[in-house]
Length: 470
Image (cartoon, rainbow, N blue to C red; front, side, top):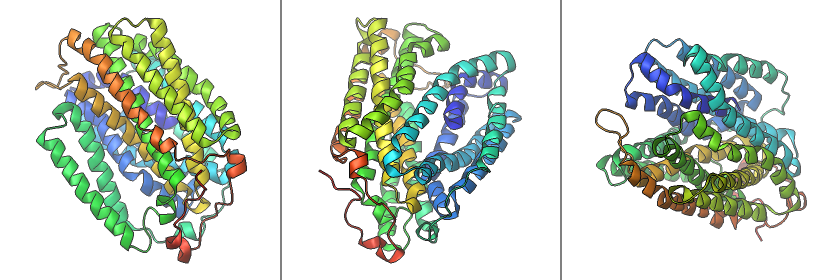
């Protein structure tokens, strides 16, 4: 929740930060990019560290580091310090995200994960909705530094609560030697991927820098896969990589987050640049999305207990596609009522997808691998938005000018591009229907079986997914 809150309040604070520190638009963008690069590159590795050394310990270190980095940013004398400390904040943020999922897996039986996962999803929705409002109040009365100071007491409170957490000690499987080479290759591949995607809005898909990044990504990814096949202790264990429910759930999250966050990117520009709304009014237009995320998550958790993951994932994906498709009417004769309904449908669908995919991923995790699987899930949640925004920005023809300010085409051109762009993003989300069709066909309370991790000497012989796929 603290990570979601931090990300949304920063968006409101960036214009004030730019004016106060005399930063260029490129430097302001790097206050977000530096954090995203660190988080995306290290999530899986952070989860593996939790499996080995204990998730409460990683959570404690993560929240203290997050608090210290936040305080440093609040005291930063220049934008260079802000960018560097945002990267440090991202390192500790990476420790937080997979740990919370792993602790859910250790605290609840696999067939009872629906409710706690739904509560977690609702909390994220509340934080995302509160961020712009809280950020606006803090910036208006106390300045941009206040949005980082607010993290400190919250993080310290979480650290105190962490001391009360009692979780099982790491299993022998989770205590294997950490594959440093694999970790470095994976971190490099993810960093190159995210850096390339974040550069697409400025340079386009056909630019030399984009192709260079994609070529480098292919080379590093090939080296990572080759190393993982040879090493005795891969960073992503075969029992995880070969699990159809896990890989399908990660793919679902990648495509649906890409579609949804790309749509939010497009609608934000449409509301502010075409309709002339201020940031607060623009955010209020999207409140139905947040409301249905919060209200829909418990319903999705109940549905998951009654119906199969396959059915709930397909339903959620269809709702996401319909919601984005409904938003495509913005550029034509769409009314605010239609827009509100579209946002609500999108929120309900995304809540259903989030609860289903998260519960499936975490439930499929053997306790010794709960962290690394949580890291994979969170990686998809971070890479997906970068992909969606890259697709959206390239279609909307948004390019930073030489001076660093956005120079999208004329407002009529942007308005005309809104509908087609949102339909493409709906198509991106629809790609999740394929992996959704691979999820189990029985409700979790009937299909779940013992998911204890295999012994070290058996791990490379696991060829079947952890659940039967109907």
